[in-house]
Length: 373
Image (cartoon, rainbow, N blue to C red; front, side, top):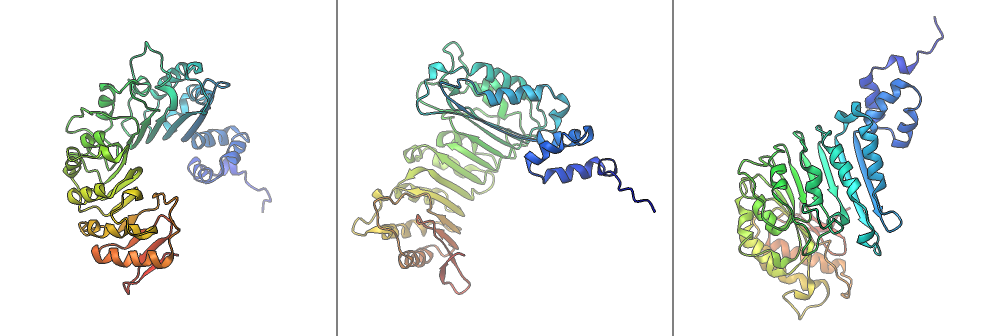
């Protein structure tokens, strides 16, 4: 019997090696790639399948050098391009960074050249921080659109675009409309700095399940599409009786509503209950100074929500954890328990409640509310 131990490099097929490599920490995988040419060939495909790059841009580092190096590395390895599934880029600045000192155009061009080769992406994120604020005056095109123009992602399922925004900066054009019409498999979309009309064809985004963005943009995205999850950004005054009814025109009922990115007055929650009574999950940041019962104190201010919750026919989770309670007394378990009981009488479908204290309460089989484990 031979005592020779077979070399794992020559025994295991590439598929098995890939499965093993996928569960290894990235630093270890990078070391393994140096062992042999075969290990490198397999490990590189795993390493490059998921790319996350974050650049902090400042006066001392006026260019997103990590992004540029990443793009250069990809363009030197065309044999790996079809392996890349996730490509996420984030830029942000320090507080004292002067926009005039930034030089972002070379990285923007490099990103555009790179993305035109990544036809197999599942997930794309471009959060470009100051890019639109620092754009040259002669460039009358949103930096996101300068990058995605001419790109083709037939397999894309998740997309997130955005940059710092202020009144007067370059808005999106029809290039974004055309791009969104070219990704039929897209299921999740985030547009953090789009505040206007989207002129999409009626058959665009037929598989869209979730959207995060401004209220006005959502009013054009949701109708005619199977969106089940909606997350709104901006001010609660942006949600009006003009755009709110358009949220009811999805092809499947809207189930999840996230309002944690805006301070919400109870009157808006009442309007939502009127138009969207079928909501199952609500995550909300309430503005407590606008609550209905000024005679009450602390968390008992929220007792005024009972009539509003009564209008929801399928609500199972009410998440108030984003609500800021600075300046109010810390709620007690007895107060939260009493509110759970009161709200469940008004809304019998409620099964879970998360309070601003971050305490989650669940209702048991005996209809008794208790803190979750």
